[in-house]
Length: 256
Image (cartoon, rainbow, N blue to C red; front, side, top):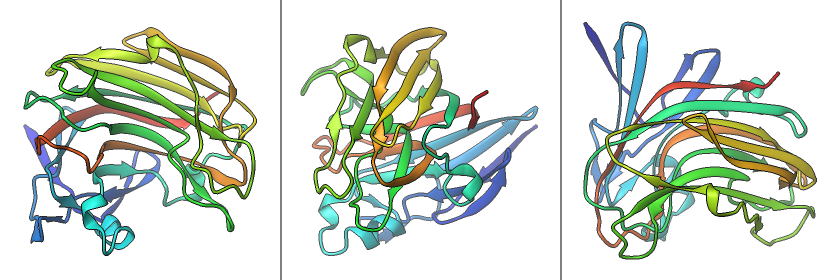
């Protein structure tokens, strides 16, 4: 027997030792969304969590942040581990996250970025919000390309108080991986937030190491990192296509 559980925007649950907060579409082009954006199916104790987004989707959080310029708001359907202090990993502490993702068949992607997981970080007073220090996403290999890829993004900044967004680290060609729909990919991530100084990032996909980096990571004067996964898509999406992906075997915590 399969149990089906529906989640809603702003909901909080205790799960696998974490307090999880859902950031999900609550409106689509000014119309309330009543369901279908985040669903769990549990079979024999294994949970598969499916996220779906469409053009025009908006969570309550994005509506507040982008008030007056909603066309600039990204579509977000994510589970976020930022409620408990225990889930916010301090700089210098090794972290590990793993999951399996299956991107469902559908129209070709036309967006310029869509995150599937990230270690994000909140600024301390006097700092600006910046891109997540680490993220994995998916996109077309090039504009109008029929080939889709996963990509690894690492951003760092060593100086407190700067208004610059951050500096992207070149991780080399192996950090871009061809993506095929309707097949599972198993990711394992090891990350150390260096708060702008020395850190570490290793990414494995299906037991193959695609990123092995030691050097600057994270942002100076930020308050530690927390994990999130799901779909977080750019507002620039000329094809207006929907996107659905399922996650299973999600594990996150301090690495030994």
